[in-house]
Image (cartoon, rainbow, N blue to C red; front, side):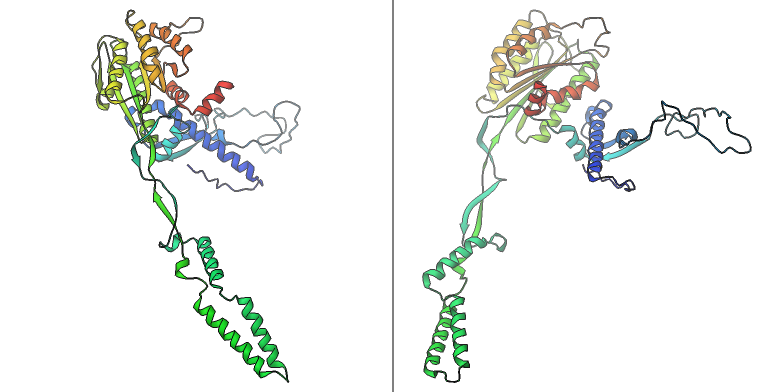
Length: 436
């Protein structure tokens, strides 16, 4: 996105001030884009749209005299109705900056930006990555990249290598002893000097002329640049190693998940799916939904099916390990897991779920993110202790022991995007935040 400052410059603003204004405006647009997530439906997450920023957010700071504090004396000229010393009441509703009429307006003017889909997604998904994307293989190759592969004797004029051509030309001329231009110029100068003499020696002059003709004839036979000197830069397609990954999306759709919780989980997975499909070419996404039994489903079923039932978290983990064994060998694939649940699970199943996560999934995974969705009313009021779910307490031990496991909790739509960015922001940004 490019923002152009077309304002006049009556105050002699410096270039640094204008650049600072553009950076601040772009940051405000970026924040407005990210905050717009809570008002969008899942289907419209990646669509273009209009965002607005408040006018006050891009005002440039300036120094001026304060109207508050100190003693100020004002003398107004007055008219036929008012004289010096009269007190005039403040107009009603004058506090608003953009009211349509006095007494009714309140608020601020806004700048509105209409963003294309690409601009919207660029601001939405920048600085995100799959962590530890390391396993590469060449079973899948792509030939989009080309590399220099020496020189060739034929090619297009655009690929002519002047340096290599001139080097070949010089070598050939030295080898064949082609007369140089300086040698010819010196001989012609001597001929001209002899011709100007009154008592010139015609025999010697004829010898010099014969030498000049011989040099000219040899220069014609040995050209300055010959076709055999030409060299062209050669390029060849190069297969690149492909980094392939698979993301397992595990979603709890049991009866304890309210519509609000399911909406939060689906928004998280919709963001994740959008991020993967836009930023990576070779990433498979496996959708697994579970109640007291788990099944692998397609995208449509994952987001829109209304099936529900009991809760058994280990069933989803078992299903994932089964799919890994069948299709995604850990030595070839970067394996990622994103799990969303309300944390309610059968008490007898928590030890098994923890064991599967710690001993079965984490050893073969690059990164595991657990998102626990809560009620809209949570967190509870100040002075109360939020209830920890059994699954959350069970997973805390796993998170403390392995940095590849991250867990977060959300309660409202506005918390989805910040948590998503925190889980998948680039490693450098994450480490910097951790050190701060």
